[in-house]
Amino acid sequence: MDKTMNMQQNTNGVTRGSDAFDVVIVGSGFAGLFMLHELRKRGYSTKVFEAADEIGGTWNLNRYPGARCDIESMQYSYSFSDELQQDWHWSERFARQPEILRYLNHVADKFDLNKDIQLNTRVTSIVYNENQSKWTITTGHNDRVSAKYCVMATGCLSVARDPKIPGLDQFKGNIYRTTNWPKNDVSFIGRRVAVIGTGASGVQCIPMIAKQAAHLYVIQRTPNFVIPTDNKPVDVEYEKDWKSNYNQRRSQMLQSSGGIFYDYDDDTLRVNMTDRERFEIAWQRGGLSFFTAFKSRLNDNTIKQTITYLIHEKIREIVRDPVVAAALLPYDHLFGTKRPCVAGQYYDTFNLENVTLVDIRHTSIDKITEKGILIDDKLYEIDDLVLATGFDAVIGSLLNIDIHGRSKQTLREKWTIRPRTLLGIMIADFPNLFTITGPGSPINLSNMIPHIEENVKWIIKCIDYLNTHNIDSIEAKIDGQNAWMDHVDLVASQLSYSADSFAGNDSNILIKPSSCMRYAGGLHNYLNMCEKVTANGYEKFFLLKRSP
Ligand code: N01
Image (cartoon, rainbow, N blue to C red; front, side, top):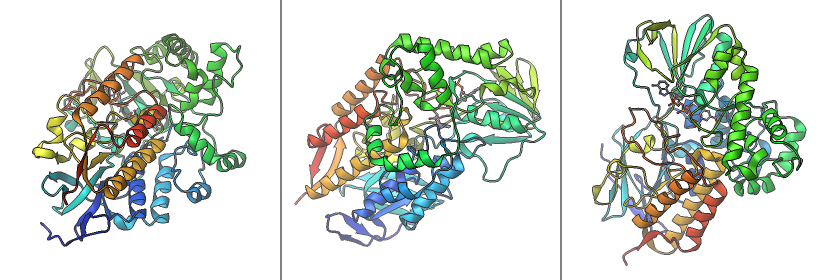
């Protein structure tokens, strides 16, 4: 239904009315919620569309057993409200998915955000009207609204990727996806289960499923480095310490490469410590702060080789069967050239009698049958199949929407060869459309929450600037965008980051980015560059003045 618009000018000179908004936000995860909060605080009329039946984005959908954040809870949280960070109590050092979702619901309630969020509504198209400098947003219910600005808070990890394995639809048992786990409890007690995929999600659910299943087959194509967690309940002293030093630590996080505060690094560890001693301390402490024990040398391939060697040694120590241990050793990349996984008890799981590792690096799954998985003529009979095969990451959620920019060009056409943005925030030919943690930003190479918060602040500052300077639209310049993506590639190659380590290389990704999608030079450097662009009056962007 095409609704009649009832428009008027607000004090910012922006059109608004019952179906016309200053800003439409797509998505209600960490990014969408904070964006809404900040826009409303400044008086911009804002509407959020959310496809799911609950807020929370990735943290709503990824309910698989063992789902947990690999950044410490005190740091994987909003910094914008001191009252919020003082009041909220995290129960575990690394929060589980249900607690993170409770936190997001608490934030939405506390700041009265729900009233501007429309759930169960998928945005299907977003079309730019050049004459009016406005976007028309259409939903799956055929609602149509307009907005001066669009903010894509669609998340990097929201579109599931099913593997293209013949016969998947023939399987008669249950199929579960880590990317979209059912809300009801799933029991694997007494069941024969297979998990396909050993990425960040797979390695977290495997130890949990192994505790219940009669037998678990782990189908592994590429082994990853899996760092343990020193997860434990948050104790009173630790919490008190964080809550009394939050401001200082949050700003230290922004000055770090990973957006993480660490209370130890290679400077604070003993100077004459051997690499093995450093490694042992880091391994015991676990989590992503593992990196910091070698912080100042991580650009050096020798230390990457040393850490790789020491982790291999650890795996051989933990896993009793030498053949299984050998199959679990990452072989195609050095430590530090791909985001490592974090999970408790991962390698120990392969000592359990009821767990079988099926290594398919030299072969592939022939097909799925009614009864199970056929690999090299051997049928693994199962009752339940868990697909931990990941996401059409970063670009999937954007390309799923029919986005038409200037001259009716579609984003899909623009990104045929590779996704291109300026700073991961704006795209040439798509004026007034912002992407939070878009391709070309650090994405999950840093703590996502400070990254999201800083992107939101940049966008808010930009919209305020446009309004106070009577500017109608902002748009990335093509040469600025190309220069940014060249820089992203250069940094990735300097650090030996593999181009497709995140994008996935499965054949069902329609558009295969040929280069790195993430800025690997560190959150601190990225934010400095964003700040510089703003300070220089939005260099590398076109600013079009409003006609008198
Ligand atoms: O997905 P992935 P994910 N046959 O793409 C395998 C974040 N995250 O959901 O490597 C057999 O990493 C594939 O094998 P290969 C985190 O940012 C964070 O696990 O392509 N196997 C791989 O093993 C992460 O980067 C947290 O050879 C097939 C796996 O499936 C991102 O999410 C927790 C296959 C996919 O791994 C994505 O992680 C969870 C096939 N046909 C996730 N197709 C934390 O904060 C694919 N695979 C802790």
